Image (tube, rainbow, N blue to C red; front, side):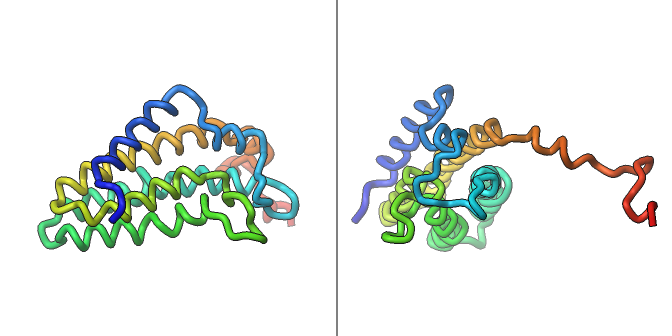
Length: 179
């Protein structure tokens, strides 16, 4: 049996407090375009930064969090179904961002070993959860952790690159206007 769910919750809460104001190592590495795993497409890291923003968003406030809140509040879902649902929505993405696969991927793919470790701890701790209220309490901490990471990644993303891609609105000539 893994850790008790309250141990995992406590560890998440400590990590949230630690990274609230201080940039986490995994964010600093991404900001510096340091991906020891070799992640990247055609020798560039913009896609890595994009996925770190988007996937932490999906694990948190955009997709997984509202779906879990709805399932936990739905009387037709029992606690075991909610545990499976959380696992289906989170485990594969956490593993993609934080697992290793030697020898081709000797380091965590997108520098997120803590994310996948907490995710694995949660799945193992599910054995100790008996009620939807307990699961909701643990999921609340997970979502706060992931949402905080998302805010960090959103902060360091090079949004200024978008200046090269202006919106073509109703008064802006489109390429088709020049044919």
